[in-house]
Image (cartoon, rainbow, N blue to C red; front, side, top):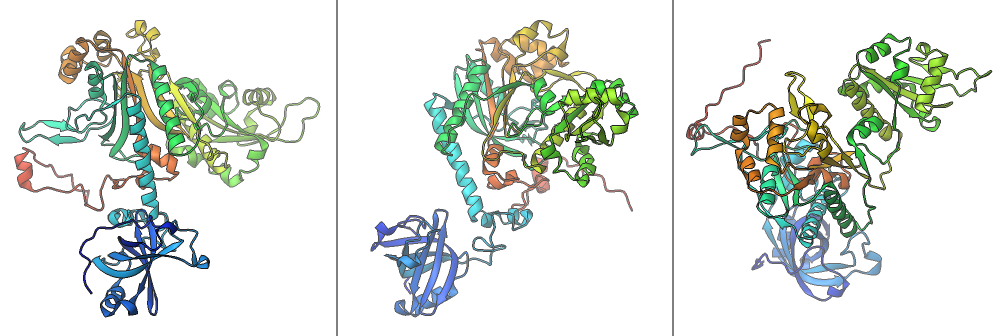
Length: 615
């Protein structure tokens, strides 16, 4: 059979419709399936646009075509030229966009053969990712990317990024690329370092964010900047974290917090309208950090369900339970969640006994619980309690506990106490989220956003006792706190804000220090000498002295954002070539050792890790 002269295609495998009937077309793609019906062979041809059924009349086209078609296997790359014909009405496939037509082949060519795929790409045996071990999918990612689920999610990601770019262009923002090889600065995580060959013993750092460069752009007069930026952090990985990631980075001059809020809310409304086809209610609610911890135990609360936390410290401090009293006496707290009867009844005794495991990673030693007896109390006596701490609560404290929790008959109270109030808060936040999932309280049909504001500026390093910044040191304190900056650093709040979506932190930002004297005061509190400040940040301080406008910005995590919208459990499902939990690329086998000659050229000597102890 004569080979086709070119691999060019006239249409994709998702293009053809009834209006193309009678047209000679040329398609190219991967063999999705092959079915032999004697004189006719049916081939489903697939590309990222869709699937088209091709009929090959092997007897009519001769022995060369018959031999070619007989060889076809799944994932062979082929080209077909033929005529578009309408399917009989009873044979049409409503599940396919091309299901009303088929292509009657006139010639066919194998462009490339394929080894047997490591797993099914499509068909009844191919799931949306959960059917194949993740490590195997990552090892053969180039095959995994052909699967419908991965292609759907990456195309969705493309549409979201395109809509972002279009929106910011319409709003007068300028897309500026910032350096990848830059200077190591403290931003809260470990840097990836890159050795310099021409400057032996010196290193670049891959950027954790474009933070300082976008501030310099504001000083340079580009008062509305954005970038879809690649960033790098050498930190432990989780299901929603990667060592290299993408963020939407933006900065604006002559703005305050409200300007940032309006800008991002406008972006989200645009994305929901143009990409998701929905209307999004704005403005988003705002909540101070301290209030978020008090009500939800976490600085990124999921507002798609209720269950707020109540304080029971006053009751715990006077209870007959030693562990409760000691927690309060040592400066700790006791707080609880109240589950009404319709929810309490869904938790089994096995569930209650397993609550300690839910909060163990947060540092809590366990979860105490009491259930308010449903029978009405006689003679004005306090309702009876049943549970792990019921015997430690006399009648007067029982009344106080029920009042503090707003509890009544049938309610279940879940209580955590600890000498460290932070452990109590975060543990209850984790327990609340567990209840939301276990009791199916989450309204997954709607997305809920929240701005969390007024974060603390400083905290004490538990090892050294010195002050460290809770965010990055370039954030501006709230104006009312600036006079007491040195006197009471732990009381200083920032002009910083987090955007939370459905219980996940989507992005962080702040209004920045544009006053060099104020920035130098912050560095001094953090323990930087004048010489060290100049060595680390001299270029920024010099730029601030040159006339810096008030400015602020935010960065949103693109990968996590798409993960939330795609409703998948792992961020790797929305990244084309992700790393494993050990920061490895199973496909390319990176990271890997390099030739000793390369190390010598870079003036680097590798110290091997210590050998494990014998036995």
